[in-house]
Image (cartoon, rainbow, N blue to C red; front, top):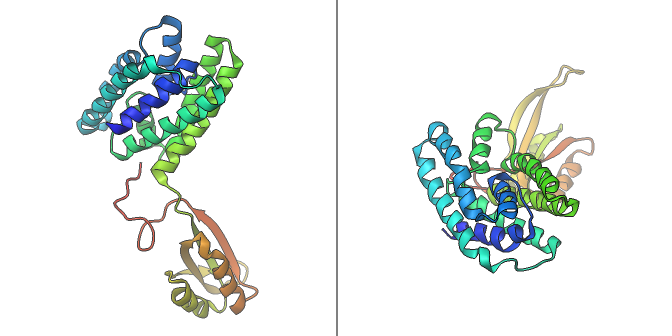
Length: 272
């Protein structure tokens, strides 16, 4: 319920009264509202009816129940708060603040296993098909289409550009709420002194090390490849340890968006 009202604050007090359509069904409703004066919250509810039917068929009744609740509450809250907007006429402030509020609220609603309907349902369906694409990225693409339409309808490029800024910020905040910032690094190390390095990693850095079996294509020699995940703050010390034992060590460092297990996130963390 709180998340739904946060969502409504972002829409009714910042985005809608400034004609900033942040994409999705809500963005479409904002465009129609500014043309017809029909309440945005009611439009959101009406447009979502056929989409919610699809939700029942494709995503199950449980999601439908939680989503219809979030949809009704957020639609009601949007209409309730509409007379109090806008809080600011500054398009930049409105786009940033509104996007942060909407991004946080949608992220919290998603983590609770529900949606606000509309594009959220469509995004969940797309995520079932394209699991490698982040939720916020899908939102950004679909929302960009609505933003372009808003610029054409309102005949105001500035409104469209600020709405675009809003979409980018909303996408970033949404991914931040959903996936967090583990700040982890994944290390692959090939060295002739792997045992000494692994021992110091475990003792001094308190991190686990896994040996993978590798084989050099050029030398045809078998090699142990060290695999290790650690917090990014430990990376300088880790590199120092490696160089102390082998200045010619081969090391690959990559960013790990999510790491589950001891020392990192629990396995019961919600992944959408």
